[in-house]
Structures are given as C-alpha cells and as structure tokens.
Image (cartoon, rainbow over all chains, first blue to last red; front, side, top):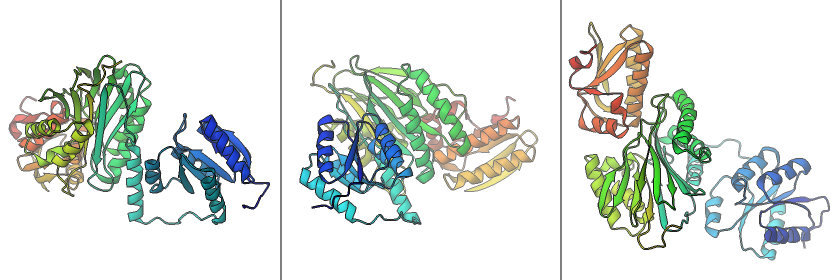
Length: 371
Length: 110
C-alpha cells in the first residue's frame, strides 16, 4: 500500500472523458487530490495555478502535442510526469526522447499497473538535470528530435495512400518531409535546406513550422507567398536557402495543387510514364522578394506524385537517368511507402553522400472512388 | 578548391578549380568579397574547372551575386560544366545565374 499523503496533488490531462474518469479514480485511490483538464492549455494552467506533485499527460491532445505540454511544464514545474500514449510503438519512440517525462505507459493500461508506476515514481529521488551534455550526446538528441518531427503515423485518406522516408547523411540533416490532414484532403511538403548537419537541420525545422502555420490560408499561392516572406527574413540572416515542394490534395476532385520552389524533383507517375512537374520559382530565401506560381495535376486512379530530394542524383549521371530509375523502381512497388523506400535504396548508402528523402501520394487504382 | 583572381579593365575574373562544396563555399565568398571591396563590382566566375557544385556552393554563388549587386555591379558565371548546369536548372536559378559561353561573353552586352 502506498503511503497516503493528503497534500499531494495530481493534475490529470486527458481528452477522453471515460479514460480521464478512470485515471482520476486510480490516482485518487493512491491518496492524491486530483484536478482534471481535457486540453493541454487547461492542464498547464492548472499546474501553474495550483502546482502539482504528479501529472498524467495524454500524448495526443486536441490543442497541442503532449511533448510540447511536457516541455512547457518543465519550464516551471518539477512534478513527476507520467506520459500516456495510445500506441505501444509510440512508447518506444518516446523512450528515446528527451521529453522531460519521468515514465511512459501505453493504453490500455490496467489500474494495477498504473498504480504501481506511480508508486515507483515517488520512490525515485528527483534527479538533477545533467549539467553538461557532451557533443556526441547532443548530436544524438538532435537526431532524435529531428526524427520526431517527421510524420510518425500513416495518414489514412479514402481512395489514396501516402508514404515517405528520409535518411540524413549525418546524424541530422537539411531534408524533411511532412504531411497532415486538411478538411479537403491533405497537405504535403518535402524540403531540402542548404548544406548538411546541424545548421541545415535548424533551417529545416523552421521551414516545417512556418509552412504548417500557413495551412489555414485558403489560397495556396497566397499561403506560400506569406510563408516565403516569413522565411526569407530568417534565411537572409544565415545566408541560406531551402528548396521546397509544397502541395495540397483536394481528395474529392482528385487534384493536387503544388508550389515547387526551386526543388525540381516532383515526379508525376502515370501508367508507367514519368514526367517532371514544372517549377514555380527559385528556392525560398535565395532571392528575397521572389514570387512563386502554383500548378495543378489531376490524379487518375493508380496515378501519383513522388517527390525526391536531390540526394537521389548523387548516384546517377544525369537527371533523366535518375528519373528513369525512379520510374522503374516505383513500378515494382505496390504501395507509396514501398516506392519511397525503393528511391532511398537507389540513392545508395554512401555515408559521405547527401541527405536523401522521398515522399509520395498515390490515388489507389481499385479502392473506393474519392468521396 | 583553389581560387585565382585576374583584374581586367571591365571586370574581375575569379577562377575556381575543384569542387564547390561546403568546404570551398566560404572561401569563394571571401575571395569575391575581397574583389568587390577593392573596387571591382563586375565579377565573372569562370567555372571551367569546377566539376561539382552542391547546395552550399550554390548558396555561395548567390551570396556573391548579392554582394556584387549591392555594390552596384553584377556577378555572372561562365564555362559551366554539366553537373553545375544541372544544379542551376533543378533549382530554377539558371534564370538569375545565367551561364555564359565564355568569360568574355559575360559582360559583352554591358
């Protein structure tokens, strides 16, 4: 039996009413006074206002990522923090991450297991943060953070399938891909920041964040122009630039609108043929004040768009050769993910090579027609 | 990568031999900054000996172009090799950094 300590306060952050109720019941049973929040921001407010000895935190909250909540909590609280995830495979990913959480548990959990974890947490002395992080460790953590910025879950969209893969040349790199659902379908990005290593990775993270924040704007050209202006300021400072392929899929119309900012490797795969999608302007940050033109491509059943980063080209003598190889490799693969994996294999595994990344959205050949 | 500079009446010619990559990029910036600082704001980068350029190299060329333009001049490139040409076209930068057939042709139209 745990020692009851009447003053201990727990903040339960969980958006699902049933699970929250269950958590409250279990944690109260451990002698805590409990308060509840259904969103990350409410949870933060509760911890800020009344303090906490224990926080249980759901990873997937409606308003913000649990990792972000965790990070913010750590700015002002050293409460024991137990992260709760919906999936066991996320657990593995989280355990490698420096999130600031003390322990993780995945749903479904048994009341007994949760109670045992809490008891174990309070047996642990509060550890001091590591004073100095050696360079190698920092690199490893940077790589983990960067990996955590890639989409971790498949995006399920009726009538389409999507895949992506990214391999940095060093522990971190300037390439990334990103996707997320939108009311009409999905938004998809592949970008390549100038250079390699940590500097490029920082720029890549900025590009990702700015493009994500542009998703709410209805007009793609205006959204990209706005994001471009925003990024130019940062990129100008560092004398850098990023090539970007940024697209929005309207699932019902089977239409992909995209902006290619100096990227040049957007490939339209249709019935065994491949063609390069036209560019809409220079890389972002290369020439301040640039404008970009969006284009559209209609996807018939079985057709798709695959975007690769220029790391692919290192293994080939010319762009046409590389594109022909992608066409052949993609034709062998049944899924978008398989095609992306195959593109990474084409690029070879030379450690000294560039970052290489591929992302693909494909309309399924035989699936249900887009709703 | 080794750079040499030749000052001519109408422009300065910068020659680079080797790979224009992450290592060489800052050197090129330095060389061109020096050229511009000494009064030559018209610069031709002769790329006959540059068999490879990566994104950092392209970044350096763009930086040098800005530098020359800020000084009221321009930077042009000549004798571009196939891989460099590919990078320029892929990034749509050939519209701004248009390759010229020869160093002499770069500023022949003023």
